[in-house]
Image (cartoon, rainbow, N blue to C red):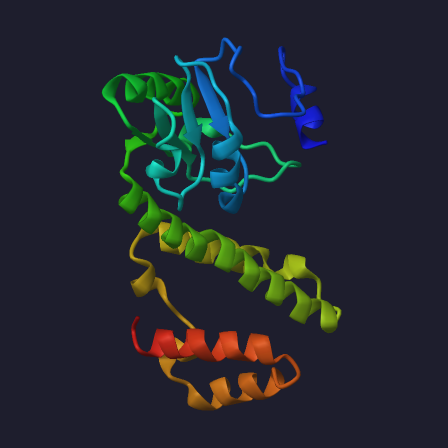
Length: 220
């Protein structure tokens, strides 16, 4: 189903019911699946000898593709949703390959998409992906909680727009540690206690609030 939607937007593309691409003329075969499925797909994948097989994961090492003569990583550091267009020119693309020639081909492709192409080995990329989970996925989950708290009191989520924007802009303009504000930063213990009491019916959120507040107060 997803393949059909994708190929409908391409000038040339067909949907296949198997992973045998051995007769393909493609120079690069991109494995764009969830991280836990990469090994399974790689095991079944058949490609022509000239093809470079790459995956797009931030956390899976290059050697998961070691069965292929030519392999690499093509990891764009961005969050993607099917209903949103992304301006790719400024998105960092992190590259790794098992040989210089393959790297050169991947670099040429990356530079045709983005102005920010970075060489990065698997260990660096693992650390980058972990940091990205905190910066993107966890931040978004905090906003999910924020919206649900507001919805419960019939307060429009849009009231947060300038606060969220300024928070992100300050963090990007300098050191986010210096930009930290709030009751935990000020060690307003009574405010923290009142907030935790308000979250009694939401033990998961209460645990998140307590852990994050303790991390802020510890300066970590």
